[in-house]
Amino acid sequence: QVQLVESGGRLVQTGGSLRLSCAFSGRTFSSYTMAWFRQAPGKEREFVVVISRGGGSTSYADSVKGRFTISRDNAKNTVYLQMNSLKPEDTAVYYCAADRQACLGSGCYDMKYDYWGQGTQVTVPS
Image 1 (cartoon, rainbow, N blue to C red):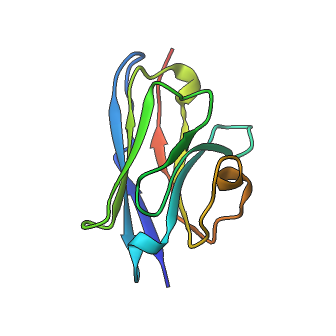
Image 2: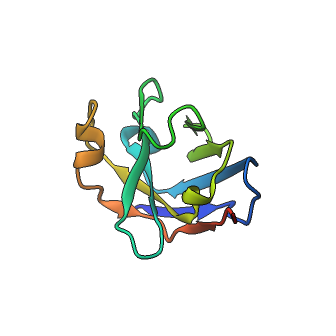
């Protein structure tokens, strides 16, 4: 089985930066498409960004494009989310997700991910 554990969430001031990590436990990390989602209080979970199995392709939600960067280190079985220029609307629980399915474009966030982490809280006060 696959287990995902997020870390790095904390309170950050507007305009600040933060890096989240997602540690993958299981076989063949490089076979998994990895993604970040987030859920703010009173809102549905929303797609943030996805990275392909080899790390060569990414797709970002418009709300974070230009501010957030996803990366993966397949040697460390870890996915990162670098968040810059943080805004209060970025406040949410951030979840790491994994799936063996390859994807392109919108298919990467439309597909259902089989594995999820427990989430890590990011707070950006006004």
